[in-house]
Image (cartoon, rainbow, N blue to C red; front, side, top):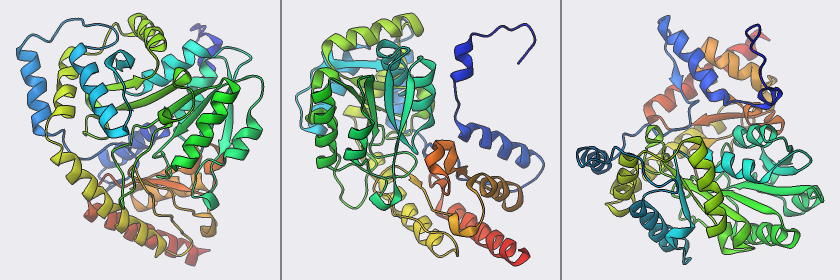
Length: 395
């Protein structure tokens, strides 16, 4: 910290994403001439489909370069509502949609609108690290809900129930899940949503990976169950349409809460970029062939990396049902998650993340993103196997 900055104390409660720190270290090694296989960053390695890029370019040419409504352009809110209703089998109107620059603002705005000192919010651990960071930044207490490998990293509803107190105001769920690739069943979602409804608790359902599913698994949504007035569904375009840099996400909630989220957006960003929103309209209403092809390729890569990890002594890995991450158990290697993360990067040239980047319950695991080519995944597996074999011999 620079002398004399006098930062607000809440800044000490703000966390980060370790993925970007590991990426920086990996890039520094590459600048020195090292060969690095990147399996640390959670974004598709595909380009945004050409029809979406063309729509964004056309929007610029057509003058979509000005302010728009804080809740989003009507054309995109209508497209999101139609797509959401069709895919989830629910009747959701555009007035229940708020468009934001990326998925994170939905989390942040929701927590800022609801949480304050003395409140508690329950979040999955291991889980996306920004949940805990934003809860703590709001002044509330972040309460971890441990996801256990023996349950395929699904929420234990009875354990969730045991964590609920009179101070619990928000519960966060994520399905398909980052970092484990697990999915909640319809029964899980129903039980969680009904518990929240019984206790008057808000539910944030992060469904950003809702289209990236494997083996014929179908996605279900918590909005089908419980109290729709206290449920916020988060989704967006970054993962499904390889649009991470476009910054385009949305929330689905009650009309009354849309107004509160839109007011926060007015104060924070004014609105989401208009040309980006028009690209989003094309993404939802145009051909979906590129999405289907990307998911098919992700499934091929998933099988390669899971089989390869399970062939390495000391490593075991469950087969994820969605998203594009694996979360192998590395306890039998004799190395901690942080040590193995650091040594794989520095000694083997494989960039991945320690399970502890996703919370204390991730100790004993690593996260690999398989948003990379099969050729690179196989090279990373070869390097990891060689490193562990040679380090075991050295011991």
